[in-house]
Image (tube, rainbow, N blue to C red; front, top):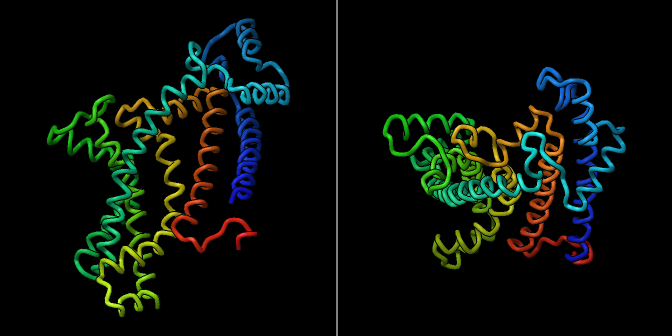
Length: 310
């Protein structure tokens, strides 16, 4: 296990390097720049001073090496859209907002999705199953920003139960968490239902029933434990999706999270902010996949990650 984890950590470093090279080249391949005259009228001398100040007058290989050397020391530069603070400071200020919103969304989505999936599987081909399946299809088919607009129209404009947006109070989490959590909830429900139905037909489940175990004991002791493995595979990528911010939800509800600043940095060619954000997302994805693999061994001890343990 330890050897496997160390190998994966080395792989994460390689992913970090490859992503940094690809992102850096793509940024500079796109026409335009952060100090183009059509966006910010500048004299040639002023523009040259800005390029020199941020090192953009250097050859691309030198720019990349200088940036990565500084990044390895924790210095990701200064965001062009907010030159009074550092990129690290901007991420430290905005990412916790996205993480909090994502955690609330997952806290809403996962238990409800498990409940709907269990109910649908235990009451297969009944009205309960049809209702839970309809909710799952709705959550997967309708984009989260459409759900967000519907929530604003219903809960804010029509019934005036919640404010249309804002941040800082507990009730500000309700609508964005529901809109952000609908897709993970629907995915959890679908895979829980299909996993339980598949495992419930296995021979060891029939053996457990023949021993006189109740349906609840069979479900939680045997069925769920084996049905969770494919669910873990599907839910792993959902975690970085919801904790790294989403421009649509944050824009609709005026949430000051990381996703909003990332999109504005793309439009403004804010190279330091784009690089830092994408590298952060890449590392989060890699770590989540590593934790997912480790979680397999917790749910099912038969799974072994190290070849020597097999």
